[in-house]
Length: 618
Ligand code: M6R
Image 1 (cartoon, helix red, strand yellow):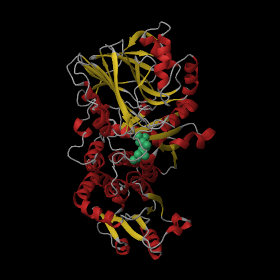
Image 2 (cartoon, protein in one colour):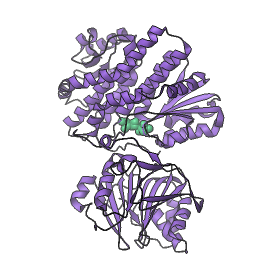
Image 3 (tube, rainbow, N blue to C red):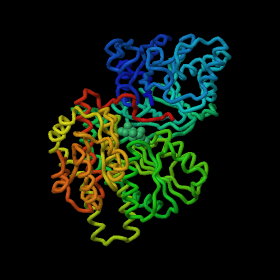
Image 4 (cartoon, rainbow, N blue to C red):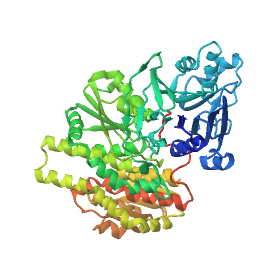
């Protein structure tokens, strides 16, 4: 969950500046400390400290290194082993200060290795698992192995997940990168400069040519060139396919917005339009696999799980088959031996790197091998998830930098909806006219969101002003909108630090309602679907107990509007064709509410406390 950046060049570049900008673009992965090491004149020059990158830069001038330096590694940290302090910040050096290591992931056996190295006299200066790696390499080099061999030998002893970059003071012409279960991409400007990073946007301003590293691979990066080896076989380099990345750099910059979160909400219409262009054959391929399955599971974490809940509802409607939704961290423990042959698992993940999801999928694959199919929906080409999947759709949201997932949620629900309608078409359960109307509604989602965003910011700011003093919230709904309530609630929780319960409006009577007092805010998600009448009853129950009712409704809504203290109106027709896709069109209202609530409470919506965008530890 940390961000790694490395560069080696034969050009005249301000390496400190490029490395600083590189980790700034990865700051969403962790932001409690950072550091840079630059190789210069057979020495490793290190600057690191605890705090956010900008604060540390102010103090240490992170871009100020000798202008003719050619190699730098940089790191932004999300603390796992040891608190965020200067000593625990990366890079971590060996005893002789010749080897520098930056690391994303966790070494599970670090205590054992640390004890062994301490016995041999190595002196440790941090609480981290990472520091073990530099000392272990040092140890192997002291027994006459060269740098590359020592790295391979050391890494083979490390259990756990890692993306690691390592340089050596005596090796000015290359640095080494290894990967197992933590993402690493290599960018190449042929003949000039090579980069490594935890994520593509870090080097997107310089190159779109990149290699995606596989597990147990070791890469030797030289200026403008790279060689890949299997960790087990350093004798001959491997062939690997160079990929051309289509993302534009604008997508990874704030582009005039105050925050990535706001920018990414505004990008939703474009992200949806691009996702609607996913080739029909691709949608049909996944739809066929799901339609033909005996048992269907859908699994994910966080926002992607709530997108899955919405998707499950929509697919079930047109497939008439039960789909079991299970959080990925619970997948193995809940299913155990009951996981059935001829099943399909739909795995949903923005990053494609969430470790609990990867573990769930790998467990299922190991257990049932070819008798189970993995269908994934992710936003990142070549991510780990894609490698364990039989069928993949890449959503077209573009890079999402804000820690709070926004546009990727919409594109995930959209993709699942496209699959659902395709299944409806295969099964011929709808008249042509009906199917056409559902497609029309789905294809209108970008326009609805565009219109909504264009006209509603001030109204939402007003709602936020009125809720300023509230610390606890309910987000209530019925049917498909429970997914919207949970996701909207998660947004407010993570970026505005309010306590929320996203819940079924019906079920809330069985306990949660006892919390309601005069002025307790309850956000009702109320599209005019088959649950609407009963939801009216729930709104009245909460209003009767003094609840402050804020509702999200369609433009021509009357009944719930009249019961509400404030309404946010979504510009869409009030019929079933549109209501089923309301998880897509209603969510921007709740995302914007959370965004403005974060600002109201002086919080940075792009960097919520304690979070990192990609969770690569259990
Ligand atoms: O990359 P993934 O979609 O697998 O990530 C899953 C969650 O970690 C993620 O959605 C998280 O809940 C976000 N902070 C939500 O805004």
